Amino acid sequence: WQHPVEQPLGAEIAAWFRRQEGLRARDDAALLDTAFRLAPAVLQEQTGQPGAEDPEYVVLRQQRGMCRADRVDTVGAALAGASDGRLTAGAIVDAIAELLGEDRAELRDAVTGPLRSLVADGFLLFPDVPA
Image 1 (cartoon, rainbow, N blue to C red):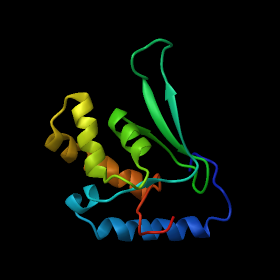
Image 2: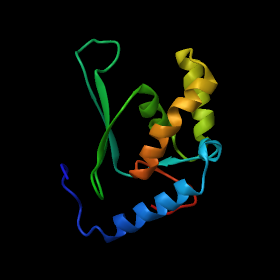
Image 3: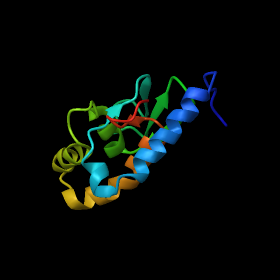
């Protein structure tokens, strides 16, 4: 494991199993119909040249638990940042598609895999599954 972890890990391991159960219970449509919330203590890091229009890369980093760090694209960063439990992931993705001038259906299809990863790793939390 390449990151420091917060001890003890028992609660984090139990939360991982709850997240897996939540993911197994939802197909892609149900996943997009869920209003996720960003986990506490998640920071976004951006690296790039000063003055550049876009960062070279964006990393979401947990400050608690397993202290994971995942590189995300613009859509993943925007989805995480907008996930406050009020809008569904699908509504957020639709808004992102409109802002980027992309096809909503294509972006919804493309985002389900990365969305599942963000949930599995504990960056995004189900509203009905405790952290």
